[in-house]
Image 1 (cartoon, rainbow, N blue to C red):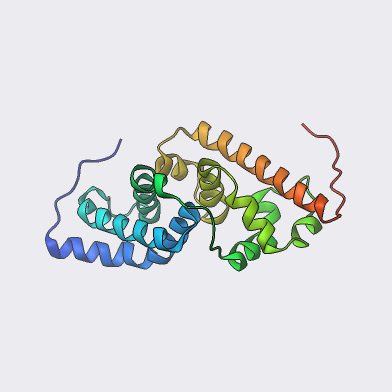
Image 2 (image 1 turned 135 degrees about the horizontal axis):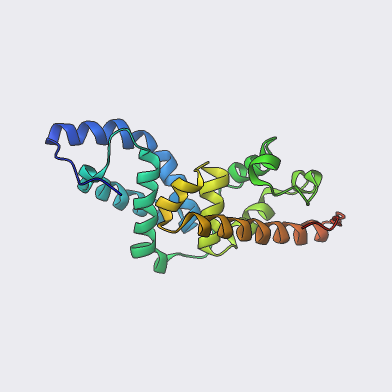
Length: 200
């Protein structure tokens, strides 16, 4: 159970805000951008989120994961206020996502290439990778972002998304499979062979 809000002086509030949350603003923007797929919406979402962070900062327990707490507020803010305003993708940081999927850790971190050969992923251009990720339903896109890009644990994701850990696991498994199939289709269109052995 979460503890009751603490009482901080104004000076303590500003100190916690500046030390714990200001350094995370770039990460918050990246998360907001991947949710909204729009630069202006992402900036608005981050600004509104940081206003809420400061307003409710007494609910933050010092010594806990500030990034997870911040992302939970941002995600809730997105659901409550911004989801209905999400626009079609028109601006994307292709290089950032391409670098992640082409990284040496992509196989172990994402488990995307366990039955889709590494060379298929590495041979694809960023546009197709990002299009596949962005085409996922926002709930599936979010778990991929939180787990495979931001590196949150299942427990942290459960708190951020306010869903049981079992739901996190099943949603992430389904999201990875959907993304894998989208990438497989792209790979086939590019002429790669994507046959894979049967597995359980």
